[in-house]
Length: 143
Ligand code: ZN
Figure 1 (cartoon, rainbow, N blue to C red):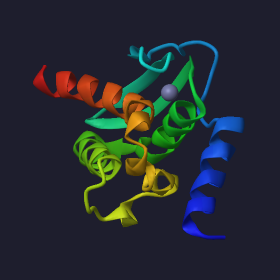
Figure 2: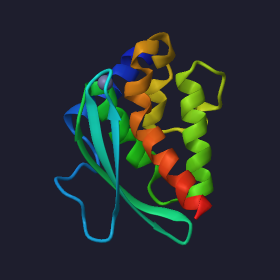
Figure 3: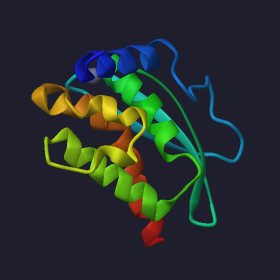
């Protein structure tokens, strides 16, 4: 399977069987909402931080396949990681979405979005969950 087909397959799989998606916010989690009006994507992230570590993250929401699969992938990529590392990973993901040369070795399924820069109209869809979490973590760091 070539890279483009593999990427498509990963995105389809995450859309059909989203990881870490739940119906309602669990106790003790912080909720943050992300909206992408240009596509109609709307999601909620539920996360828990302990000792500067994102120990868990879940989500719920509706959107296009790119947005939902990217959110599913994002939760897997960042669970159980130090906030600084999470921020770095989000920055690298965003650079990749813009078509910049980055070290994609740090990614697991997020590598499926490495060709998305060819479709700039979908940037906001793929970026929504990542950027929503980033803005929130920036606030946490400043507190
Ligand atoms: Zn979308």
